[in-house]
Length: 80
Image (cartoon, rainbow, N blue to C red; front, side, top):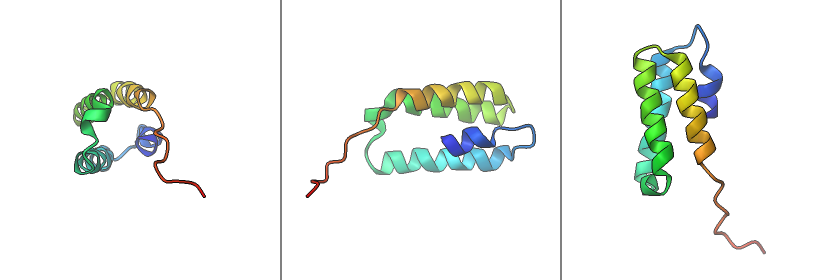
């Protein structure tokens, strides 16, 4: 999300930014994590719709909300 947020400028390649978000959603689904971050997934989908309509401000708001909904998950790897 941070790379897309940084790319939301007046000269942004909206198609490329949408591709980045689509790939992130696909990785989330493939990892089986969609249900654990459902609110953020909804916001990212909303941002994708905004990008299709060239509404950069709404896309920025949705992605910021999605990022704020995500909480770091502690590593499950044992530290030795």
